Length: 154
Ligand code: CA2
Image 1 (cartoon, protein in one colour):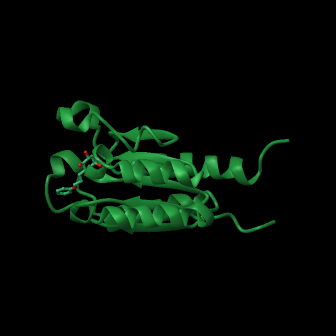
Image 2 (spheres, protein in one colour):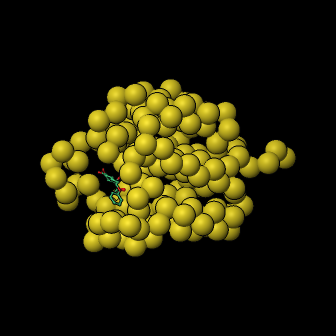
Image 3 (cartoon, helix red, strand yellow):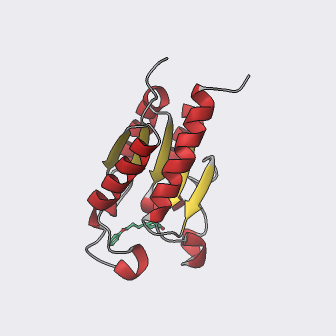
């Protein structure tokens, strides 16, 4: 049996600032706290993780392309690019690996410009509004989807 592929957890612009500002919207956890919690939950589910953050749209596209061969599934919090990026939409469509759009806040309850998600229109599903717990719920969904792909039922 081949090793289960890792779950990629990709984070977009400004998420490196978590825990330092706007805790009323995004909570007190830092991105390092979230990484540790994701790694633990994934390990409990028999998976490793690759956890990354970039402020650069093209870097996120490159990582999604890398995930095509290397990841079991992708948890993606694309930050503000969620609402603007045709490039991320196209990359998600291109890779054929399930992508779970993930948010700390619930964009549907916020400013109107956050109500459109170009990422969500390409993603397998969306988890939003549970603070840092959104990532753990997304890891669970990602692990289940990766299991289905790696061990399809006859
Ligand atoms: O709720 C989410 O996870 C978001 O993806 C966060 C993005 C926002 O543009 C999306 O609409 C929803 C913003 C991330 C910025 O994070 C900060 C953290 C601390 C201080 C300032 C910004």
